[in-house]
Image (cartoon, rainbow, N blue to C red; front, side):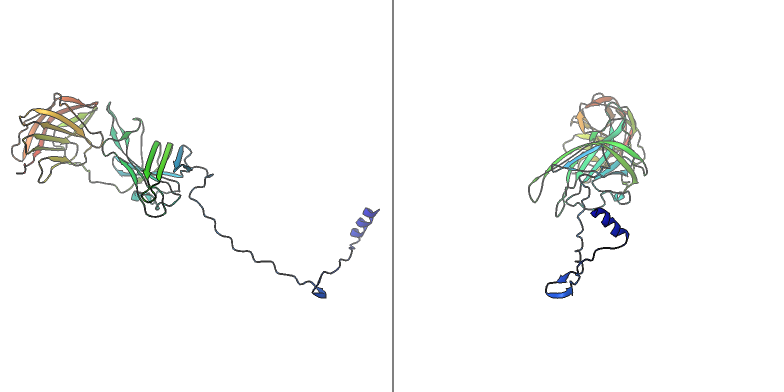
Length: 346
């Protein structure tokens, strides 16, 4: 019966009167309404470069810095020269507009991963021109200042599989196996800093960076170097006599110059260079190989020959021949080369 009466009252639009609220300090007066409190402005939240739960842009890479996982967001590549590529790895997004300068788009902060790999051409001992890791550069994050942990391999380097094809042209992409393990001591705190980046990266090509054209080779000077099945024209040659009477002949794929005031010559960043050295009696006693494509090695000259090899005039026509093996690389010299004769300082 009570429920039926309530429904009837609502249907007729009638409601029970509610007593007015009064302020106890002022009897008979309704309570004054208070304005709602003004909310405090929200403080902006600090946004890390890559949240721990962020979806990795590079799911094939695992990165751990100072014992804590970090998400790799960007891996891009720029071409520094005809045979050198620079790969930049960061935990923040990075486009192709800035890295053409050759480094990342911002300085390191507490949360940044900033790692650079330098890749160069590599001649495999069994033949075939591939790629190798020539340098690793890590800029550890710190609150002030900056420093770099780096490893360098000017010659040769750590080779990638021979079948790996790299192309950093704009709009291209390639997969790159990465295995970086670095450890260093903080200059200020003396704490140990560590970095591990492993897996396969999908690299975006950004085209040419600051291209280095200082290695443009001169015209061939005659003769060839055949190494690991690659036949290369000789573009630089110089014969130098030591103060003690020993002589050396450098043959290279790039320019070879006499060093002023010294008793030796030097090849200017060649892909491959072969040096022959004779003792005081004129006997060929050793052969060395060096250059950007190979690791330095020396050994017996085998049947290699270069005649004549005694200095005469400013240039000397030398006939080359013979073969040897230097640390797994087969070497053969052929043809006739015109060599610069270096003056022996008094």
